[in-house]
Length: 167
Image (cartoon, rainbow, N blue to C red; front, side, top):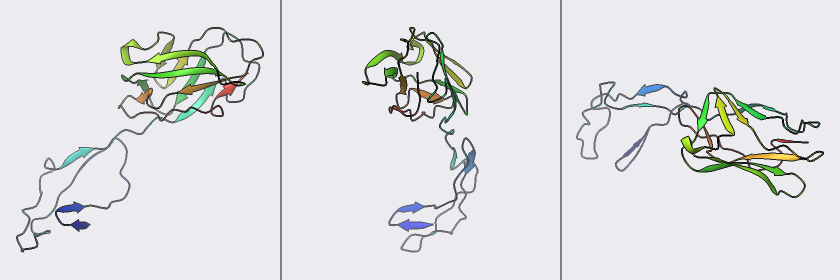
């Protein structure tokens, strides 16, 4: 515990994701600088909270990162370690050409107004796209927060050409 003027800080071990907790403080465990005891918190409803759900992490991609020989019309899929949904906030998922970083195709993510060529089934995002050009290397970027857990915790996304690229 740390007390600084009128702030009490409780240092604790890491909490579990998506778990309900409550805090109790015994009466007179804390007192003012003038000696007045704090009445305490004894009910499990007085100071209760639920921790956030864990942010989604990538489990796999198809095609896999660095893959070659990808069919020009093959859907792209990315699977996460938890169920996901589209964010309600405006965002983008993009397919870019690797050689010059030019945008090949952009998909808008915005809740119910999300591009219909994007779909989610449980833990998997599917990106249906226009046919790729032959013998061309591409990479995918996903905006920070475009995808989130069904509990509302955002996926941090990625904007580099090394996370998910293929030919």
